[in-house]
Amino acid sequence: MYYSAPLLFSFVASALAYTVTEPSAAHPWTASGPQTLSWDRVSTDPSTFTVVLTDMADSTYQQVLAAEVGGDLQSIILNPPSGGWPQGEGFRLNLVQDVNHLDSILAQSSEYNIGNSNASPVSSLTQTATLPFLSDMGHTLFSTTSASRPASSAFTSLILTSSESTALPVTATSSRSAAILPASSSAVTTSASRAATLSSSATSSTTTSTRNAGSKTLAAHVGFVPFLVALNYLFVWKIQVTTWLTEDTPSFDYGGYVVGEAHREAFLLGKGKSAAVLAGSPFFTEVFDQLGCEVEWHLKEGETFEPVKHIATVRGKARHVLLGERVALNLLARCSGIATRSKQIKDLARDYGYTGIIAGTRKTTPGFRLVEKYGMLVGGIDTHRHDLSSMIMLKDNHIWSSGNHLSIASSITAAIKQARAVGGFSLLLDVEVQSEAEADEAIEAGADVIMLDNIEGQELVNIARSLKTKWKGQRKFLLETSGNITEANLQERANNEIDILSTSFVHQSVPHIDFSLKLQVPGKNT
Image 1 (tube, rainbow, N blue to C red):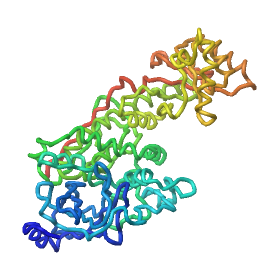
Image 2 (image 1 turned 90 degrees about the vertical axis):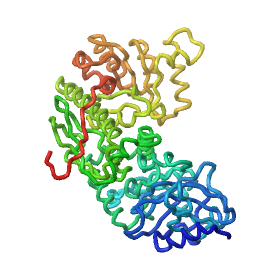
Image 3 (image 1 turned 180 degrees about the vertical axis):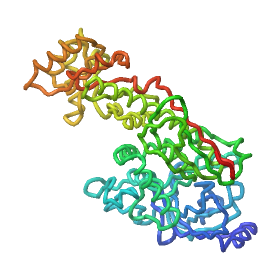
Image 4 (image 1 turned 45 degrees about the vertical axis):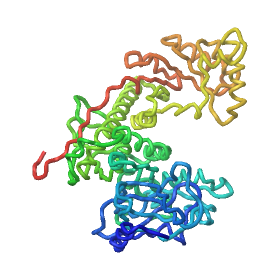
């Protein structure tokens, strides 16, 4: 293969720098899904590099896979470029200086194949993902075998993307296009221990050990159950955090240019004028984790604090701390506001003697539902259904539209039958009604939950009591009240004849909690 003189010179000059350990001839890549890049480095090597895929059979082929990769990570996962992975023999990965100096090669892998091997980043027989702190306790997040689920490329991709790191394909054409990457470094360099890690590919580096310890600390901080709930949506929320960071810095952080790379501490302060509940720390931590910073929490998730309170300390490069500041504070402010309101409503209802379920609704902010639902959980209430796929709810519009019927009453049975035909027995069915007669029809047709919508006062109590007496021993169902519930009328709605009290009051128009993040001046006490 012919190489230009500058290319050969740059390669020879860096021969003693980074060493690529994977991929290699012994560890080729598959034709689909994320792939592993691993390397060794010494302290004198550059702190970052850019990853370029080359084809030994085509000297013009250069595909930038990731930029501004942190050298101390030692391993990342690379997502396929647009159009998928090329296939064949004779590929190499170049670790280069940056996107503007693709010929300044710091290291080069040995030749390897893509798609011409049975090797796979994850065994096709058994794929098990565990959390670092859960594996110590013998817990498995999920496990799939060839008997229960095929090891499809899509599923393997999902596991690896969330389990180790994410490296989104980058087409860098200018210095500005690369500037986004430090702002959303998870798009390039989220280390294995930042999320669930595949037990078969755990690293022993100091960086990974530190991150594993951080995961244990975070689990202890937020509490085991809330943390597992958040992890249930692991594949979504880490990607969302990356998206939020990218939204805030789409091209270049001009203000950050003047800050520099010095390591600094920043204090997270809980402010405002009244007591508040801390909620959203996993999201806050993930923002700075993706930016290569560390977060030390001084308050546990779900604890109530009086302002002004030193909540946490963030450590990292000053530029990176400021890159994540606004995104992290917005997340924490919104989530804590919902948790605070949720706890207030729950405590007030309990003071009134109500022992039933208090729930939020699906009236959440598009793109922010996970954070808002999580805030409800931390505040101690139920989230209600998470989305349209997690429970069937038939409201007046569904019932009116279910067939050629003249009234809602005559449509309820038909709508329930249609819903059962597609949802089967495994999904609960919640039906909104406006009267006792409609409730009777819904119960007779097999509804699991009867929502008495906008029925208040003594009428609500009388209908609930009548329905439970009438259907006792014949049908099992829950009664739900919803609509126009506030602190002012909570006492009359929070009646124990009602099983579920659902309200958007706990998450719509909720005041945010005031937080600030202040960089500390070295040598001065704050």
